[in-house]
Length: 316
Image 1: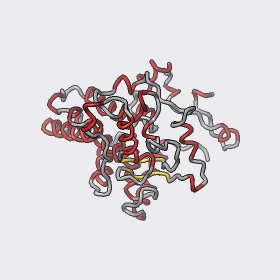
Image 2: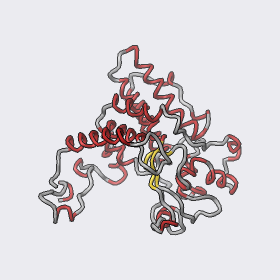
Image 3: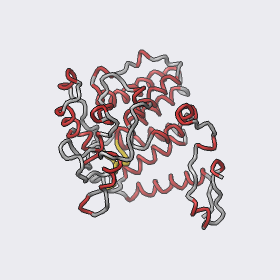
Image 4: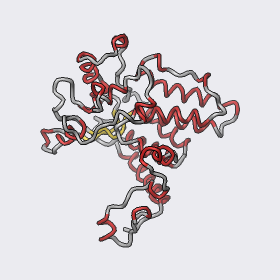
């Protein structure tokens, strides 16, 4: 097929999701696509279109459901001894949030791909990528996560095992990190809590003067749900500390929170593209300054054997 205009593709996705919502179950066991998962993709698509009312509406079906809740993570018993000990990492590796990534079907999960070594589907390759002694993909200690992380934020330890660049969240557990029953989580509740916060912040700009503080308060409430899970009351924000007229600073708070919360899960670059900040952020890191470089190349067989599809300009 020839390339269709982006607007037509988006319209088709919306139409497909509307149809899906008619026939899918309201909820399920997380490894089957549900009506809630369709609403989740609808919320993501609306965010790309900057349809913030659409984001808020789609999210009501997720955030208002009793079938999903944030997994437990922060434990105040460890705050006095934030040292790298085997007991501390044993707690991290066995807590609810890490189980979201390594055992699956967690209360925070909306949709995930079911993987198991018993299925003979070579899921052991995931451990080789992120969890072994010679892993291919490792987070760098010198990166934006480290620069922007908060004092007492446990998400550092979730992503940097024993102060080394290694993803704790992808270890199956402390004593047997090479076991493989981990599912691949594609949609989880925290993403949509922060997306709802972003939508409320965006609404501040166009809201009536009497409503601006209400949108700000709701956005900070939602962000605080994530921050408290990450490090307790010490990380909580106060809406009164923000200047309602400095909207860009308020937006940066939720952008930064998405960086910290969803680190290593494949969201960051696309968030930068969606918010128009990819060149601003990536330029100093890798020299990416050409607007044409924002999109990726089209897989070459599609061009060689397709029907008139042209390569994206930057890669010609």
